[in-house]
Image 1 (cartoon, rainbow, N blue to C red):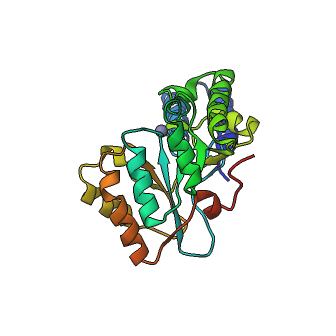
Image 2: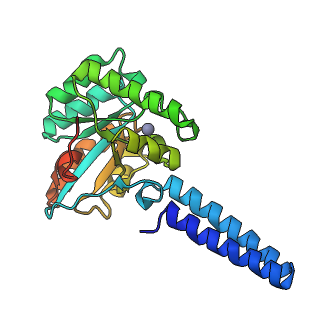
Length: 260
Ligand SMILES: [Zn+2]
């Protein structure tokens, strides 16, 4: 698998070749262009690996299941939110669909009943950090760990359960996030369908976009506060079922343990 370790080795080897040719033949304009291109390519690769969680560039993330059945899982990030989450839970209850909620720890206070309701109604809960800061992935390792621990504690205080599922804020990974996941022994959970529901222009557009190319094993990323998510959720479930898909929890789809 091509990851940040193999990329570093390839980069170091190419750099060594560059230094050798400079030593042997002197510095030419061609060599300056080559080193520039090499550096730019390396930076582009690092940005790509950080942004695309499915690339598994810095850390192995589970993004798609393979149960041999036409099963899919829906996941909701950023809750609990008292204005949105009850509506999502109502739809899931009516449709008898289990889902995963990746919670922001600081949203739990004041919404404890919603978190209890998630568990009581058969959903699974994961950690999505405590603060969900924009610069989460650029913090020091110790700050990152204490933030994630704080979210685990908030979840455990309400449910008695300590999550093993972790979804990095914004899906951004890097060597520090990789260390956090390793140290806390989390399963890093990504997605195979990013709906961009928070930017959707209409419920119908979001519905069609999400249904398009839906495949067995897909993990779908929604947000509790997605502008049109609540408006299309029931129809999405119905249409997906008509196409033969079965909804299961993400931990079942990925065949992993959700809690310690
Ligand atoms: Zn988020």
